[in-house]
Image (cartoon, rainbow, N blue to C red; front, side, top):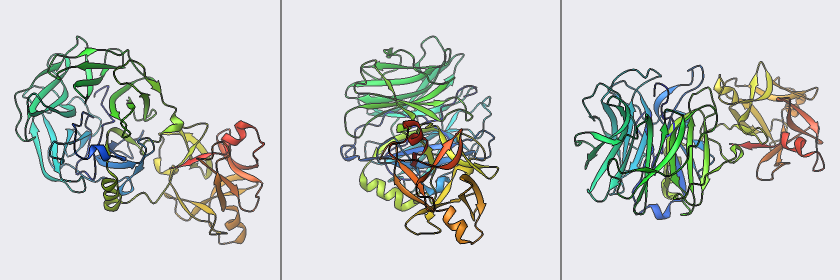
Length: 463
C-alpha cells in the first residue's frame, strides 16, 4: 500500500454497504442465489489525481454485463466507518453460507501508508440495502498494517478464512479463521513465496482454490492454486500479467453465465488509467486475453473495488434503494480511455482520470429545440450546454434564443462505427455529426460512406 494498495475489490451480491474504504476481492462460496445471478454489483472507494474527488467510504455501482457500470447514489457514499481512522479502503463483500453478507475493509483513510493498524472494519447486511453491527476486529498484535482483506468459506474447517496483507519482517499474506466475523483465531502466515506480495484475491472453483496476487518485486500479477486452500499450500501456475507502468489489486470473478472468467487489475496510481481486464474460458489454464478498453467502463474514479454476481431482484432492489445517476459520461469509441469534457469552455476529449473530474458529467436532457432530440447540460456548470458555433463545440450559457437552442440540440442515432454505441447528429445542420478531431469537439459532415476513422471519431458510448 505504500507503493501498492489494492484499489479494486469485489463487491458482493446485492445491495448497499455501510462502509468506506478499500478491501480485497475474494472467494464467494456457493449460495442458493448464485445460480440465478443475472447482474453484478461493484463496491469501491474513490480517488482522483489532485485528491479533490477522494472518498474513503463505500460506493456502489451496478452492471448487467459485468463490464459497463452505473454508479448508485450519484456516486456518493453509501456507508462510512465511525471508528478507527474514520476511513476505509479495499472493501470486500462476502455472501455467507446463510445467504446474508459481511463487509470487510481496510481501516485506512487517505494515502499515508506508513501507519500501523491491526484492525479491519466489519459490517453485517441482510441485503446490502442496509448495514448493521458495525465493529472493528483485531487481526494481530504486530507492528504492521492490515490491508486488502479477502474472505472465503473453508468446508474442511466449517469456518471462514480472512486473508490480508501484512508484514512480519517480509510482506506476506496472513490468515485468521472465524465463524462469526466477531472473534478470530490467532493469525498465521498464509502465503510467503520468498518475495514480497500484496493484495490476494482467492476464489474457489469446485475443489480448487485460485489465488491471484501482486508480486511486489516486479509489479506483475501472478496466479497460484491449491487443492485445499490451507496455509502455504499454493503453487504458482501462471506467468506474470501487467499493463501500464504498474498494477495491483487483482480481482478474479466467474461470469454469471457459468462459463468464462475475468481477471481485473487496478492501476498503481490514481493518476493512471483505472484498471485493465483479461478474460479466459478456462481459469485452470494459463491463457488470459487482454480485454479491449472499448468493451468496459469502470465506475467513475473507482479504486480497489470488489465485484460479485446478484440476482435480478437484488439488482432491482439496489436501484430502487439508491437510484441510478442523473448524469451520463460520453466515452470515445476509438480512444476508449478518453471522455467528453469541457475545459476552458471548449468541448474536447481527454484521457481519464483528470480533475476536475466533474467536467465529464452531463445531464442529457430533452433537446432544447426539439424534445425528441437531446442536449448536454454541464453538471458542474449548470445552465451551460454544449453547442456548436462556427462548427466548433463550446460550453456556453443558454441565452434563450432560438439559435442557441438549435445549436445545442442533437439527434441521437446508432453509432456510425458501431450501432450498439451512439452518434449525435446536429439538429440544424443535419448532415453534420458531433465528432472529435485532434481531441477537440466539432460538427462535420459525415455519412455511412465516410472513412472508418471519421466514423469512429463520431461514435460514443453513453454510460
